[in-house]
Length: 327
Image (cartoon, rainbow, N blue to C red):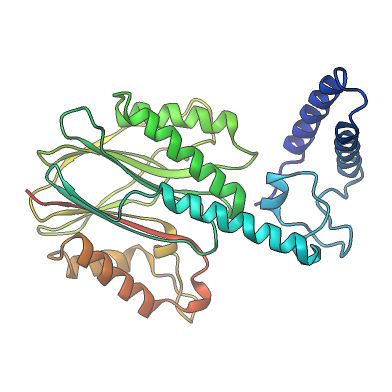
């Protein structure tokens, strides 16, 4: 994902101002002086058009690393062995922390069986998946699935931000539309330039009613009964515009019906000839398997995806969430 030069320029100037303020109280601090020199050097490279170019091989530095730290000057291929080990250790830790944020893979209760499958393409993931069951309330559950733009550390950091934000919003008693609007403003004000997230958020009640709102994500699928039905996530992705508003869709699930949510690691996987798995295949598959429960449906879907897609095309994170009405 390209990085906005205006954004980098602004961020570097903010750092410079804060460093100068800190140095007024610690003028002899060599560490602060060194950081100021690095910031000034980055500003000069930005002015000359060489910002983001590796000092050693003169190729582009990875965009996600620059977004996380605009002061870096070498690409991954030219890190020392010690630096590579340190980076790998940091990524492993970030990946473990991400996995700890996931809900249990199976939830049974309040009239629902919710099952999810989370499969990052790398050590860290930009996919977001959560299930929130407030301790107080009338048995409603909140479910969310999303996908942050880009890859790597910057995407994983935003995923963690979404997790904490929606955990707070869900316990505050807001509607799903209001939750999405609040989250959008926070993401807009705090995310990196060009970064956004697609998302579906929903509330499921014990009587089978579901309220859905979407932010530019892939459609939800209602499976079971006579057909497979699509529910598009029409709202704009989170973080694109500060004042975006979000509507909601209400539906009623009967016993045995399942609401299917997924990220593009499923639908955009390709076979050896470059054909995408796609929405039409998804509709056909779920139409043929609509009698299966949440967990069995997930297993069957993954088997079909694996048999269809080439190993080379599986380069994106994949998350599936199934909400089966059990009562």
